Image 1 (cartoon, rainbow, N blue to C red):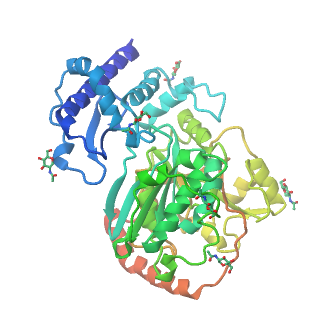
Image 2 (cartoon, rainbow, N blue to C red):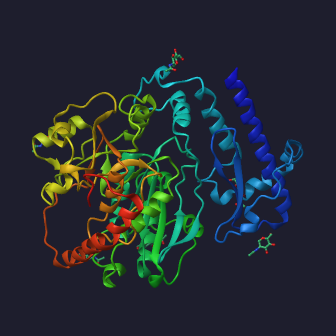
Image 3 (tube, protein in one colour):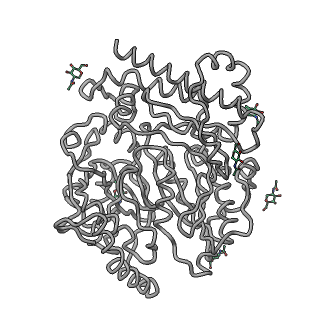
Length: 510
Ligand SMILES: *[C@@H]1O[C@H](CO)[C@@H](O)[C@H](O)[C@H]1NC(C)=O
Ligand SMILES: *[C@@H]1O[C@H](CO)[C@@H](O)[C@H](O)[C@H]1NC(C)=O
Ligand SMILES: *[C@@H]1O[C@H](CO)[C@@H](O)[C@H](O)[C@H]1NC(C)=O
Ligand SMILES: *[C@@H]1O[C@H](CO)[C@@H](O)[C@H](O)[C@H]1NC(C)=O
Ligand SMILES: *[C@@H]1O[C@H](CO)[C@@H](O)[C@H](O)[C@H]1NC(C)=O
Ligand SMILES: *[C@@H]1O[C@H](CO)[C@@H](O)[C@H](O)[C@H]1NC(C)=O
């Protein structure tokens, strides 16, 4: 009964919202320029509201953004729907692959909501950990209470950087916030050989920020086109959304129109534009890699509630997403009992250059036993990756579902731990003043997580494998000098700020 009523109100609210949309479309219909289109901004899955905004691709006009009349009646919808819908839809062509048409959003949201009230964690009957059933999805949506996010292209500023957000978008269509996890990552174009192996294992949205100052933009754009057009499968096209950024001091001489680009087939007969790169504009100009700007850009653009901010050379274990989300939906201990904020660290390993990347924990453990796999950075910086119960994790056999293996804290022996974890948009950002060359670029975030008493819920069967090839320590005097300066900056400038902003807690340090 209740679910039906709820459903009814929800449908009514959708109808009203569509009416508002169409009404406003009529008001502005003489005014539809290329690059201007309608899109749903948020549909939060409850009966509260569905807002629609009028958006220009490049410059948003705040006056136009506010909808003038939200009291348009449902009757307008009846009258105008037949002749208005096609023309309104036509203007959405530009975003057709990446943002929802209205019927699509309605179908998806309606499909997800009705069962939610009726279900609870104990009535979930998960028989396939590698799939998310509709009941589980509906339950997740109420459990997470997340907001859906758009994928519109935007030209934004971030400190000294220009950001071409959603420059080339994945073709995956609408993804609601509870449905998947976004792998958020960053690179210069010379690292884009990692994209294919990464997406083949992840099989879900990837939000990738590329630093492309000056003359690096052309090979970057060619690399994106190569990845989309020239590989043996279409997974990059389907899942990867590319963002580009560069300092205002290093603006490329010409910035191509991405819509024209992706419609022009790339000549695939040459070698990949990202292969065997010896010199880049960035290196020639001695620029530092703004790693945390990149991380924050990639994360901000992610449309899902859960995100995995990671390094592009770390390939996740297969089926991680459905298993993780089924675990979240089961909401068993310690998930249901802890009230602290939390993140979900994933164990990291390196493998020999010549071996297959393991697909299961069972395979990984066999490789650890014969030393073809080792814990991450064992030979580079063994203590950096001192992980709570790391040895116990490796000793524990694979189980048939994902669970929290151990709840750790970033304190005591683990005070310098720099985990890679699944988190959410609520977690602290990375400090954009820090460079990759300066090292310890994630420590300030780690400090804030510690002060906020985050639980680090280490996952049992999930793992990340670094691109094959075991790393050894190489001394780099130039980088050490930069690292020394950054370290002093963190200590003398950032740390006092963090103490003022977030306070202190026993055992937390940088
Ligand atoms: C914004 O849009 C309104 C209404 O269409 C128009 O009157 C105004 O001049 C626009 N402002 C800018 C800065 O384009
Ligand atoms: C929009 O897409 C439809 C269907 O794919 C196509 O028939 C139509 O010509 C497109 N319109 C524009 C303006 O590109
Ligand atoms: C969950 O749902 C089942 C059946 O739908 C019901 O028997 C059970 O009491 C519910 N559990 C809780 C904790 O609400
Ligand atoms: C593609 O590039 C190759 C060599 O770079 C060239 O020989 C070939 O003609 C090009 N194909 C087209 C269709 O332009
Ligand atoms: C980079 O250097 C290698 C070996 O020195 C050379 O074979 C390769 O062609 C160079 N690549 C580029 C893009 O110049
Ligand atoms: C190590 O173990 C893996 C997984 O069982 C196996 O594929 C590989 O051949 C082994 N390598 C060596 C050198 O024993």
